[in-house]
Each structure stands twice: as C-alpha cells, then as structure tokens.
Image (cartoon, rainbow, N blue to C red; front, side, top):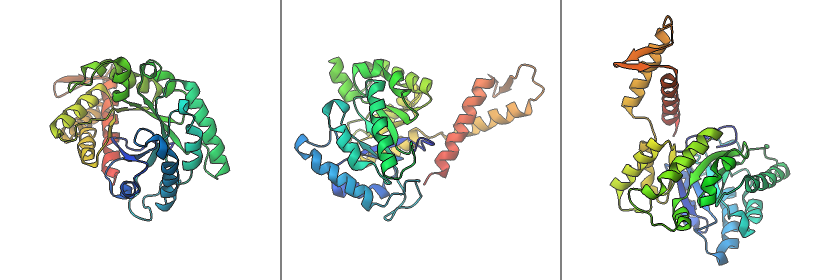
Length: 307
C-alpha cells in the first residue's frame, strides 16, 4: 500500500499495539493488511510503552519501504498503525515513533475535517524527508466514526492524495448517535451509504466496520455480503478467524468472473454496434456494464496474484 497503489484491502486485521506476541505473528496472517493499534486497544498509561514497542517491531520485522514480497520472517504483509486522534495531542508523537521503512500507512481515527488530514500530511512529509523515504510513501486510512465524520466524509476522503481509503467505525458512531448496534445494521444504513458515496466520489476505497461477535460466523458472512452490496471493498477485522470469510466475500465469484468475461468479449466483438450496445445472456449490455465487468476482472487478477 502506498500513495501509488492501495493493493488489496478486502480484510484489515487489528492487533493491539502493546502485544508483542500478537504483532510478531503478522507475517503469517492472511489479511490484506494489519493495523497495529495505538488507540483504543491501549490504555492511557500504556501509550508510551506501546509506541516504543511498535517502533521496535517495525524495525525488527525488516519491512522494505518499497513493499518487497518477503520480510526477514515471512511473506510481506502491509502494516498500518492506528495513531491516536488529533484532539488527544498524541498524534505527533505517534508519527515520530512509527514513520520509517517498515510502515505502509497510518489510520487516522475520529477523522472529521480536511484540516486534520492536512496536519498529519505535513508531519508525514517532514518525517519522510528526514528519514530518506519517498514523498508520499506513507498512506492514510481515514476512519470516520462520528456523526460529524460521516457528514464530512467526502471532504476527508478528498483532502490529500495520501488518503487511500475511508473506513467506517460503527461502534463509536452509534454511541455518538445514542443508538444501539443491531445485527441487521439498520441504524448505520445511512452512514454506510454516505461513506461509500464519499469514497467513490474521491476515488478511494470504502472499508466497512468491524463485526464484534466472534462466535457468529454466519452473521459475519451475511454482513460481509451486505457491505459488498453497499459498495464496500473490504472490512475491518478484530480476530484472525474472521479474515478468510472477508477475503472470500470481497473477491469476485467464479460466476461473476465468467459473466464479466462474456460481457467484455461480446462488447469487443460488436464493433459494428451503432449505439455501443450488445446483448449478453438476454440482457442489454452498454458501456457502464462493460466498465463494471472490466473492474471485476481487474480485481480477480489482483486476488489471484496475491499471496
């Protein structure tokens, strides 16, 4: 993941930033990225120690700034660090500690304004220059999880080329809304739509919120499919056992790939079609359908080309 390429973001697995044994397992996970968490997963009195540990772990795992395919301990897995929100006054110190060759991105929680994104970008640019990293090499994943964040989602998403994804945080959002989370997710339906539209308008990926019931595999699968129907390209995970279901749900099915191939082949073969319209499987196919088919095939190629 970089400002040049997001890579696959079907599944992003949170790991507490103060748990060395868990973070050490990063090279073996099947998630498209991991998020080492310095925010909610770490108690206030442990922030400093966690910050130091994350810094050390980034160095010890031997990540290459270019995103090479192999680390010292296993296959390369992009590492994102969730820093503390800007109102806490801890963001600058977090960035000072973690920006380096091992870091692919930072997650900015409680994102509510382009000014917050701009402030983080200024710090990232300074640290990249000081530490010999390419300008823009550290991406930003904006986590919108307040009512204001949802309202400002497009402004946040379009605030900088560094922003590669907008992620929905429903637990904090529903607290802000003074409503309870439900299994059907009706209370966050508007927020989901708003995040997807903001991300699409800004040309970045939308990532859905966590699913907190670790023992409900069927519920997780159902929510992944619902999120995909909304337009999300991936989902946040809180346990490794959730990752494979997410990877499956946000990957094209074989039927989708085969249909996409038929659409592209039919459209390319219909050079004489006066209005650029053909029929595939009894249904009209025009340019938007072809573009969706091409997107499906591109995603499939990225999935099959992943580790």
